[in-house]
Image 1 (cartoon, helix red, strand yellow):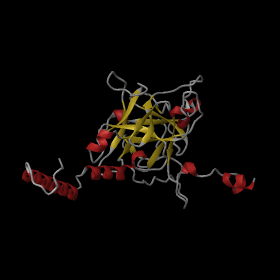
Image 2: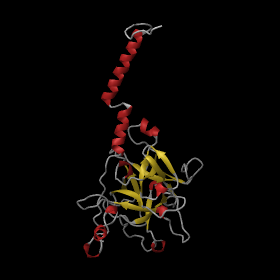
Image 3: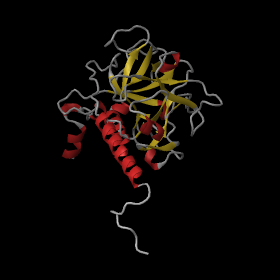
Image 4: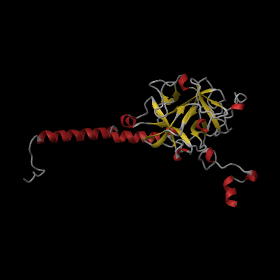
Length: 297
């Protein structure tokens, strides 16, 4: 039998037409209010991927109130590292699909991961916060407690980097080590401190300002374990392949931290070219930069 033409009215055609009109009106109202799922996702992406301008360190030190990136520099390759894990990684907010499709803003608790992108955006920039009443623009000192907060590109909220002892229900998903996460409550779990890179000079460096754009160790005050990226545990996130971040102190045969625990607090380049201080060419004798030396040779 030949099918009916679209113009033929049959069955509950009147009810079906009313339901279709109701769905259309509901769609238009949600679109006008910005409540459509695609609009919520776009708003979230625009905030967490929005470019952020880092602070400039005029004296070469890190200060309270600075907006910075936490970068784990590229270290020596090892057998357990995958080929793509040898570059520099930045600490970033990690959102699962449920959070992205369900909320218009960041919700606590929230996960963190290590991203390969070194471009300062909302999800990988942090603010240095005071926990002992120190004034803004005052330099942070080795051994002094501080907090790390991020807005994720949303100006009306602040999440704080935290960690806690491993338990049967709280641990890193891949490595089963101590978990690192973001929370909305400030407590002793959100306190961190910087340590000098060389263990033999660590005691003598206590109380000295923390230099920016230099390798340091960041230790969690409550558990006394250092922030680390194992680099051999990765997951597929909404932003692609990223690596797990944990609190664990990796020591070599000399009882010194390995490069998995190395961190650089990155600031902005004050020169007209902008960019980051880590991208700035190293000075050479006679005022010739490293790049110019290679061109001349």
